[in-house]
Length: 402
Image (cartoon, rainbow, N blue to C red):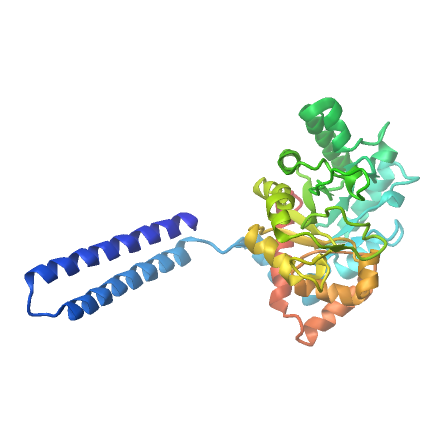
């Protein structure tokens, strides 16, 4: 599309040049017609040529370029879904427990489950696989099965199914360099796939240099270019291995407090985000990351009213300025920052209105009902739901489960 636009601009410039030359030629050879009349006629001629070129270009574009989500298989799946099933696809629900997970997966046709440490503790690998496969068996659309396996402080899986939990990427790089990052990322992907998990809510794209910062232990570092390099390498390996990646925590966590326990307000200037925090996210997007997870921080330079996860303005930055076309998901709506702000049920509707595609949710039953009601009353259109489900289905196809 960019190349076509460049060609269009060049053609328009050539047409204006040609018209100007024609105008000058007429001025020197025809003394009867006034200069004003010549100028008016030449300008009209230029406008007609420009309009003709523009119309032809747009017609060609519409005939030859497919829409962003043009995919017959996805179109067919979407058309076969009821409204209720489409809303179910938008929930990346917290795994309830081994006994009821399959029931809820079938009842709501959920988009996926996020598993936590408690879902692995005390179980064998075979038992975990059985729990996951039971959910997939009752789902009309294959489910995302995700975990947070960052390494270091956040190791939901490897603390139970590896001799030693994965170290943090920061620690691995300090000792083994990029070779260590490559090997540990490949091993994480292999472990998750062995357990029939298909999404890792990683890599962490946040910048942190101060050991006192909440995000320090989870961050790769404070140098934007170095963190961007880490993110790019990690996403590339995850794509090769068929494990979905999620860049987090957009728009960048900074030195803010823990939003698991309450609201965090970020007062940094927008230039800080554009010059530093966005770089790792941009690299991850460039390398094809399928999803971005948005934080609950209130980032005043973008939106002083809503947490980023519920902010249309923040989502607009991600879509339009970073040109991200994949799945946008909330951080867990059960976190303290959201409970203090508006409560989980109201947050679900606001999250959809803001532009999220997937909602990481604990209270998914009440939130599902709230979104369904919002569509039925006209607050949210079904077309808006379709936009998200298309992205979710495309994400599932990209990681090879659809």
